[in-house]
Each structure stands twice: as structure tokens, then as C-alpha cells.
Length: 110
Image 1: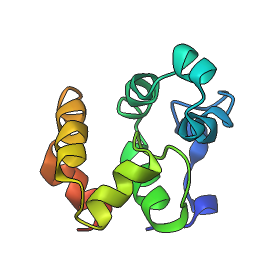
Image 2: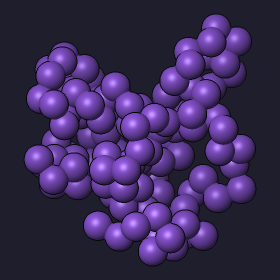
Image 3: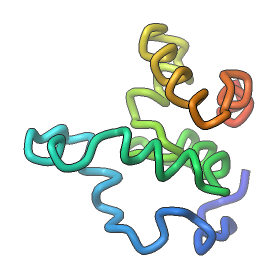
């Protein structure tokens, strides 16, 4: 997988968005949760032409934030094969965008 600088982030659906939101969502403040939910990121990320590159990059090089439509806890549940109920929830939400469990696992290289 390419390094961050090797990905053409200009094509990303999040281009021009306030990127701190992709990190602050994990702080789970009540005010932020009322304004922005993970559904916001799923809608943005899973329709992005770079979602797989972003998710793969985030799973390898980032320990915090939403990458490719997944939070840190969600990525870790797949990478560590833990919290199967969370994995199932993520898979169901990704399937709404035509992204299968097999595609997720392929991108995460697991």
C-alpha cells in the first residue's frame, strides 16, 4: 500500500472538509455526537473513490481517527479479530454501500 504522500487525496470525497472532525468524533463528546455521527462519515467515506486506499492506509499507519469510514475501535475489531458484534454492525452498514465483508477484509489484508 502506498504511503500517505503517494495517494492522490485531491480525489477524496472529504477534500475541503474540516479534517479535525475525523479525529474528534472519537472523543465522543455529547455536543459533537448531536452534530456529527459515524453515519456522516459512512455516507462520505463509503461513496468516495479512495475509500479502500484510505481504509488500508489508516489500518496500517494511523492509530486514531476515522479512515475509510471506520473508527479506530472498528478497525481494531477486524485487525485483532475481536468484538464480533461490532464487526457485524460495521459490515451491515458497509453493505448498504455495496461493500461486502470480503471487500473489507481484502482492503484490511486479513
